[in-house]
Length: 469
Image (cartoon, rainbow, N blue to C red; front, side):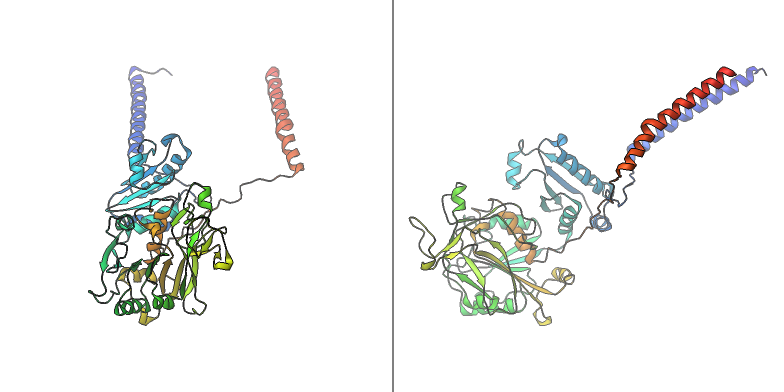
């Protein structure tokens, strides 16, 4: 059959049309793949897909989210790759998440400004608030976003008028740096002199009693006791040289301060000359200290214990000195040795207690925002923390070790900001193939002998058939 000129032109036109359509399809695929992206998680348990809880949380977040990762080697490091892969999962659901990397060696001022303590730490900004994250993973990041998303400011009242540490003071013993960083996370601080402004509001997240230097008036003590009796949360910082011991408050909380000063020779081994500088290296399982891994430093501290007749409070030590420490009952002069006969108490000693008790309907005294969180707790809970040192979050020592992190966690816990989203773990199914020796022998025989012989035989048979044809 012979093609006419018209037929040839039709075939050429069809060929060129096919080529043009193919090129147009390739260009369209390129444009679509540039503008849109998609991913299918083929893992058995969906390990590379964000949980439903995270998806719902991201849907509630309006406005951009900025994440800065402080890590060395940037694009070359495995840590940077892990951070990028994690954030990309969030970016697929929320497109206005911006991720930047900062090399701590090149930006030391930025590291000092934000108190970055470890490689891979994340600084997360949302609106006017920010969070720092040292644990990499969906659960840690989602809970940080949850804290940033919570609306409303949590009011914290500092008792004043008796020489207490101030939240807005610039002196070394004041707590302004601690308060400034917490203010970025939604806390609002104010001072209240109980002899001028009577009564503590039921809407405050917590009250801070920070090392008063002069005695409170009987009426002020009564107001403080009423606040605690009505279910208010309290952070009490007490130093060894504080003359104000408030025995009525100690009795109400079921705690007792031990006279003396803690000493620990560990510090001198690490180059700290003052034996009264206490290092805490191990932490119990508690929402305040559960995943703390760095040292915390407590300058000039003493210790406390729970009263034996305390029935209503559940007390848990959250900070303890090392076993080689002791509570020195004498003056810290000259050579200091442990002497139990003179009243010294052996370590470990308790530096901080977390107290909880169930709140009755008559005792409720929380803000509306806190009420929503309390409802999710197993029991309606009142919280108090007593620390036998106030210097650890002062302006002079806040930057040592994990002191800032600990101080932040204390206030978060007192304001019920520890209601975490639990992301269920997605362990991969057993992907290991265990074969017996006989199965290994059979597989080796199949792939190393039988299959090659079969291919060789089939090739020879095809060659023989073609020769005969």
